[in-house]
Every structure is written in C-alpha cells, then in structure tokens.
Length: 255
Image (cartoon, rainbow, N blue to C red; front, side, top):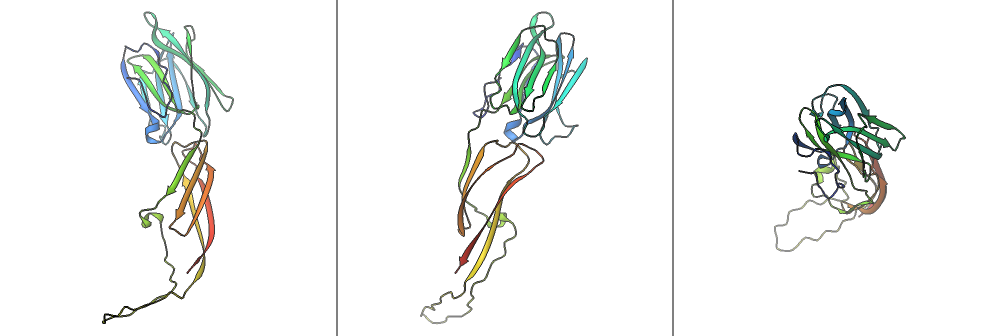
C-alpha cells in the first residue's frame, strides 16, 4: 500500500515493490517531521534505514531492514528543507530488485549521499521540502523505499476563534465594577444600574510549540472574551524545541 494523504505529494517508491514486508511511517499525522536519517549499505544494495521523528530520543527510532556494512547519518537542523533528492536501484540477483544509494541536498547548502550508485537514479519530487514520512519494503535488505513530503503551503488562517471553556485560558481574576445585595419579598421588580467603571489593560498571546508547523503566514482573527477584537499575522516555526509566541495588549473601558 502506497502512502497517500491530501497534505502530502505523490510518494515515488524506488525498488522492488513486491519483496519484503511493507512499512509506512506517517509522521505528519501526529504533527511531526523526520529529524534524522541513518542508512546502511553492503556492496551494491542498501541493507537498512533508520528514521527519527521530532520529539524522539536517540533510543527511539524506526528501523527497517537489517543493519550491516557501512553507514552514514544525517541530522536536520530546525527549519532545514530538502531541496533535491535522488534514489538509485540496487541489485541482488537482478538489477532493480533492491534499493541502493540515496542523495539529497538541503536549504542550508548541505549534501548527504550514501550507497552504491551503479544502477539507474530516479529524481524525486520533494514538493515543499518538508520530509514527513516514508514508504518502505524490507526484509534482510531494503527492497524499496520512498519518502513523503508535505505539499507546498501558501497560507493558513484561524478565523473567528471561540473559547468555550474559560478555565482553559488559565488563571483569570474577575474585576468587580459594582455590587448589589438585596432580598425582594414583594412582587415589585427591583431596578439597579451599574455605576462603576474601570480602564483595564488586557494582554493575551498565542504560541506554537513542538510539532509540525507551517513556514508560511498564519492569520488569527478572534474576539477575546468579547472584550476587544484583533487580527494578527505571524510566522510559525519548524522546530520541536522552540516556541513562537505573539502577544497583544489593548485598553478597554469596562462599564
């Protein structure tokens, strides 16, 4: 089964798609990207590949195939994109029945290449350059592999944001403008008008922490508890460790 989703480009699987066991890694479904890759080769074929998602430690990984021979590892920096990729066919009994070399370049000017480049190469469409998954067939060797990239993003918008649970906003201290305490034992309504008023400076922020994020403009349009309305545009980051926060303050006369 080939990876497919409305948010990723077509996955180009290179190698023998009928051998070994089929594996899929769908990092984007949990808001993650591939942060590190390690490849082993032995002779004219790839033996194994190991992938790490953002948020995973060195001991947490996804290994496909049986490691043997020489290996190379590449760790992506936060925000680093793949700008080009080529995958080669390897051989065991026949050319094309195994996966072989991989080579890619990145937006930071780096190049990663490992494996036997004696067969034919397939140039891969990397779309946005954000690596978010893999489609692998493997047994003792790596029979075939393809990589999933997010489609290019133009913009994201959060419109008319609503807060249904005020407790979710954290510690909120009510401001008292006026009070009235009375008991009405008659059938005549008691009328009362608020006399108090106060100017309040209200601050709020949105933040985006670890996980898969866009590299394009995000627009937020929201009313904060019906106190005042604002619109903000900002960039979210592609990093599992940093947090990007936008803060606003405004003054409102409560009366």
